Length: 466
Ligand code: AMP
Ligand code: ZN
Image (cartoon, rainbow, N blue to C red; front, top):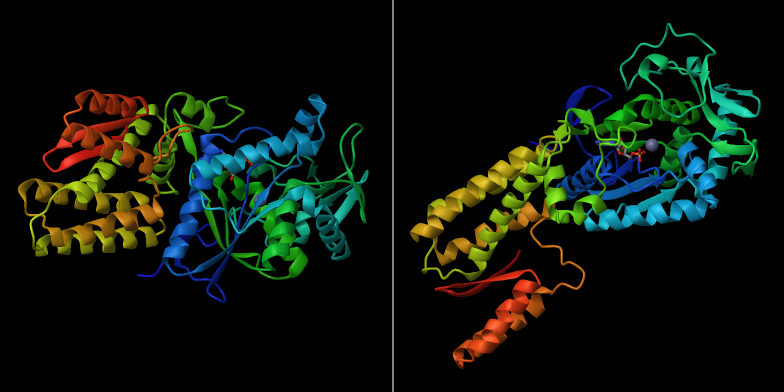
């Protein structure tokens, strides 16, 4: 079965391949950098990463653009309150966001575009929309007249034909039943930053940013546009109206949306105050891999309830995987190969890939891997698992980790690298051999203090990070 995705535009699961050149033109909506992102936001950013990885696994190349929204009402309000320039204010949170993405092992998009670097392009696009008769002006602001775009509502599957013409809205987010002409360009307010452009002074609305940056980097038609489910309306609906009114072409062939991270049944959000940033969780001793695993483990179209128990289960699952890897690396095996285990490994590989290709069914993909590990562990204990079975078992873990990417522990600042640990372990073994137990105990204590646990087994010394 080919790779397939649920397309919000058609409400169907459809086979996916890029329109041309084996390269996926993908645009994903990035963060608004007015504060640290919370792990609800990161559910969506982890989803983008998984999307990238499944596309790569299918042999496609990626041309992925993500924007950074570095001008909006909240940013301006906060920057003005702190007496900072927009750039000084947003640079802090942009860098924090990029650091957080790296910590969660999110592959970096080919292009990360800041909205404020593209203001002239936005003004130009608005100018063209004016020429096409899609806009009107009022007090220096420019609005998109949604009655001029017959397809309005096709993404959110709403019939807006009966709505009041001419009513308009200045804020960037609003409810579905409040579909109105929206601001493309906002006239300057006293004390607020603005740009002088060919359509006069002011600043862009949020929606036009994405339409313009997507087109600048990827052309008129994208293969995939993705975002969190809350962006379907009005943001993505408005992006379609602007882009298609501008170019006359389909804006994006596929639209993918991830469901929310919830806390006690409610969306995790800044405004409800029920959120955790990565920094909050690290302070509680949670490892980045645990967060990545938890966010990736539930298929993206299902909402995911955040709990600390969930994070604990993630740690247990990762431990199980790492312990299995450790056994493969350190157990002594009898010669030969058990056919049954080769068959099980092959089946795990097939099921793993088939689940991911099925609209990123991560839960099924994990089930395939854990089922294999369960069987393999039993075979390791009984001696059925032979030297000839190691390679295929390691290959299952490699496939798993090329996508989930949680096996390698994050080395804390000041922590020991694998090589440094190996060196100390060898030194301890030598000390024990020469009956220098004082030194060998010292080394064990030193390693423990740095979070490394030693285990003396019949096959030699094993180590793992706490
Ligand atoms: P923002 O920085 O508010 O523009 O949001 C960045 C991204 O995070 C958007 O794609 C949102 O859809 C997404 N997002 C916000 N809250 C959540 C949540 N609780 N769960 C999943 N995604 C979210
Ligand atoms: Zn966007």
